[in-house]
Image (cartoon, rainbow, N blue to C red):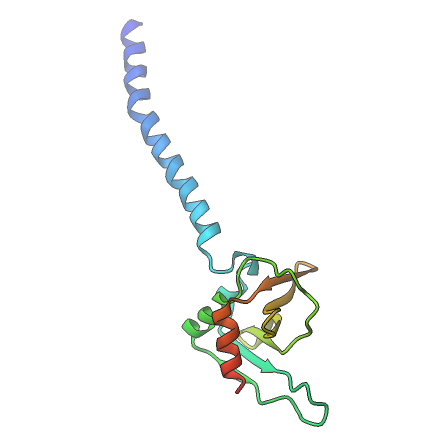
Length: 149
């Protein structure tokens, strides 16, 4: 009987560290997945999108909106999406200068309206029945302004 207890001690000494290591890696993987996504709050929309259409608004009632810009390069879609940061803007009443339309296989996934005002660069979208506001980075505001010229 004494020998059986020694075997259990040895087994516990061998397997407990293995379970600890496995648990650590599992927890690390989950944390990495939640934090490493460029826009975890997009709910995977960006990852599914194979097309991004940027439509700027004219703001002149006598002129039509400019032609939309259609982007199908995944790296460019990811780059533009990365300009929308996790932080909520302080000001949310600046109107909108355009919309980013995320599309997958011809189906609309999400519309993200944005404003490029110097004091108010932000994006707004409805996800899970909630209106969400997120800041646009300064680099993102500059990039979109240059596209609109």
